[in-house]
Length: 391
Image (cartoon, rainbow, N blue to C red; front, side):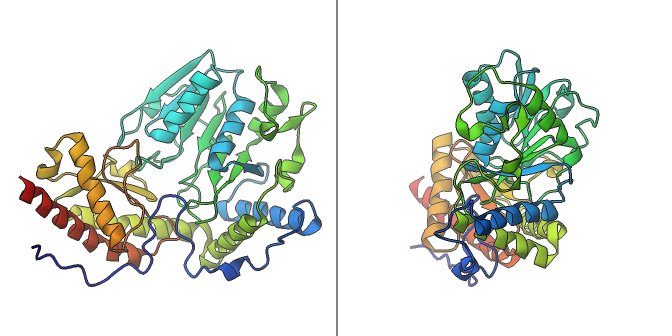
């Protein structure tokens, strides 16, 4: 019989999923009362809400005035696909991949679009590719923050201001928690369900003037589905970037996104959002530094995510097991925490090395992260006892 005692303090909110992520502190369904339900999104109230969502996005993120912002279908995935299918072709493409979503964009470029000239710069989970090897005379596609590896680019300094190609950046778990250098980015995409804890299925597409120029001067060699079409008669469809969406959005989700953006403004804007994520990730870093059984999947602190914090078990008893047994050990820990009601959805992503992924974005309270950490120790000790009993 185990003598382990459960920790005395429990997280008030056990939701540490990396998407959809925790709602903002204090959220309730009453925040959605002003949603224009049962109305056309093309009617004046719907258009006003969509325009407000775009305007608030620009204000909170600090998007330059000459960049377009559009609400598009199919979450961040739809936004990235729209950019790839609409913009790629005139130049060779460098694709950076160090986790599953970046690898997905490689598959789409190479196997679906079947582009003639592609280079893949990849790295194992926990590392970054050689950013110095990127050729910016070509188009470049990369994730700012690797959601499933916990590895992010350190900044935008590796991207030249005088680049010839376009930079297409999947920023879905970076936007609102990390400082994006828009001067180095021609396409930025993200979804509402990450750092702001919004609802899923809607994506954001931000285009620089250089990206718009490409759209208006380049006709893809392949057919474009209706939901990918950003131009008509060789000109940008400006209405998309004023709230006239390509397909019907959920006005309930739009209202929720607006609520999250207003909360962001109330607490101090982007700087406050980043500070909250940094504090959460910092609490985990302090714990890892004093805990022998756990380590970060991201090897370099300078490129370690402050949102999707990925951990691995480094204890010799577990590290010496075969990969399947290691994965089973970590899964048993995650299951114990879920059943205790203290941490939901913190298992590593299915394609990533075994371990844990704890969301530390701005909607998570640092006090909840701090309350979770003793429970992780408890779950490890509990499972280690089982391992030793079976030996």
